[in-house]
Length: 317
Ligand code: IPD
Image (cartoon, rainbow, N blue to C red; front, side):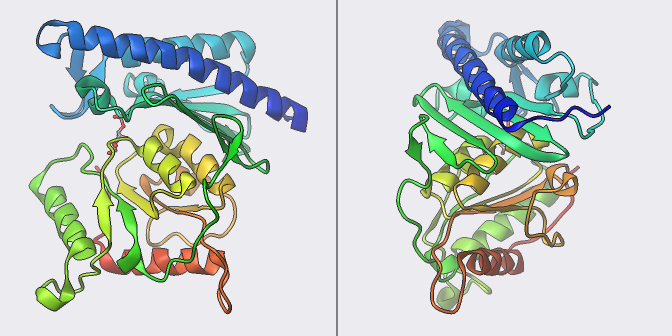
């Protein structure tokens, strides 16, 4: 029989996830010190798909910590983790609560000491993200949300950090983008063309250029979602991430009033579906103020439409 969660059980699950994220955060900090003290900084660092898709012994260690804590407290819940998934542990998603965890999102940053790396703990329930906890121990920032209860920074500060403003078009947006791990010519060209159209000046030769205010790459999908939820980024887009990179961020962004969706052919309004979660194409737009004649949600959808008319689309490998 499917497991059902009452309101108070959902709240305890959030508290548990926050507790585990804090414990994991302490280990991440310890790992970061240790990895940077080691000779050349490269011992204990491995690569998965290629030389830029890094994994460290700390990713594995942190996932173990989270998995064991979950096993002890919630033995019947599902568990999808980045590291175990890459070793072939790939449970089917059911209606039961399922943890969806990236032990260190932003592993490259973790290795380099660039302070945007975090643990990302999501819980999927009835096939849609229910809980999101993102903890960046380098900046001591904890983002958390339970569906229907708002999103918070460090437990007490509501997100977004200031009241949402309107967003007239991409030309006034600050956009989060990433290079990702796939560096084949085909994909690097598609990304570069997309970035060029987002940034370029149409009056000076960039056909279809939007001349956005600028673009940022912080190197962690989860941190990008947290930045959109905070209001610092207007939107974030990436093709090629996995559910554990985005699951927690989706809840936090949605609960801050943001609009989280998938690729250009996805048409949805409410909950993020399994298709979006597993679709490996993600977009999220910050909360936008209602204006006379256009609701914030309509504005978010307008921005998504303008975005997808500007960038290229491809299927991740
Ligand atoms: C990666 C980061 C990166 C994004 C990649 C992700 P990882 O996660 O979020 O910003 O561009 O698509 O896979 O490998 O650091 O856990």
